[in-house]
Amino acid sequence: MGDPLKKIRDCLIDLDEDCVVRFVKEALSSRLSATEIVLGPMSAAMEEIGRLYEEGEYFIAELIEAADIFKKVMGLLRERLREEASQLRGKRRCLKVVIGTVKGDIHDIGKTLVAVMLQAAGHEVIDLGVDVDAGKFIDAVVKYGAEVLGMSALLTSTAKYMKEVLNELEKRGLRSKVFVIIGGAATTPEFAEEIGADAWAKNAVEAVKILNELAEGRRDSWTGRK
Ligand code: B1M
Image (tube, rainbow, N blue to C red; front, top):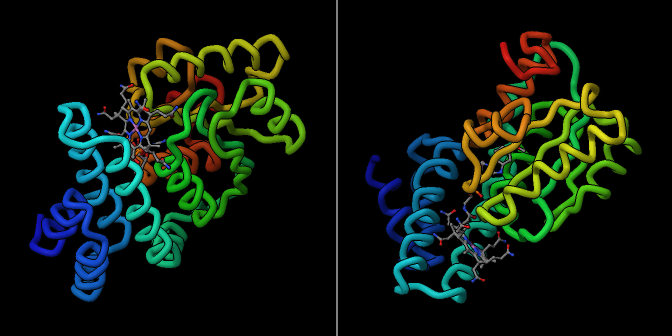
């Protein structure tokens, strides 16, 4: 990790907003991309902050402060993120994507980042926000005629709810018509397979790549396998 990137990580861990902003600007002027900044040191700092929380060194107040700084930086970088993601624009058609963080979970930074980048890559995104239950997901899929349902979860306890949404899709006879992609720190590719999702993405760039492949017919829309 180059110097400004390391500084961004350290400043965010120290919850020093001015310092984060200063080095984000420095990183941009040394031609580092906004995507690199957000997915690299900013995300690494959030993981470390989570670890400090687990160890009892940080408390909820610090998590909230870190999230506020992250969101401010995302605000600053939003246009650049859009420009960079638009270069990932698929060649064929755009997909309608309903996305949200599942019931019981209010973590929204990663989900919003995925939504912003998918939109910039040319897909139509309906972002339902956080704490979304199965009924709301499915009603939106039907209302907007979405081909893709995206779910995010950061808590081990809420990730399980994704299975309930999949069961509900099945019950409503929609499962074979909707490609389900999941992500978030509480999920893994194994978990995605176990609950019967079509795809798992590690981060926002990977989510864009997967959905571009789907739009271009390079992915089986039912099994998620290439
Ligand atoms: Co909370 N929190 N939190 N938290 N929080 C975690 C998740 C935790 C891992 C921290 C820890 O203990 N190490 C832990 C969960 C443990 C577990 O269940 N395994 C935890 C906990 C315990 C809690 C509370 C229960 C604490 C409490 O109240 N006692 C509580 C729960 C509230 C609730 O949801 N009901 C809580 C609350 C909060 C805040 C509100 C204070 C705040 C969130 C603010 C907000 O989002 N507006 C917060 C924060 C900031 C975190 C950490 C520190 C950072 C999360 C984050 O924003 N990361 C987090 C630590 C960690 O994740 N290791 C933690 C940055 C973001 C860019 O990454 O969201 O992972 P992420 O998104 C990535 C990828 O995962 C992926 O792409 C994104 C970007 O590339 N991705 C997708 C995400 N969604 C995707 C969807 C896709 C595809 C890819 O397709 C649809």
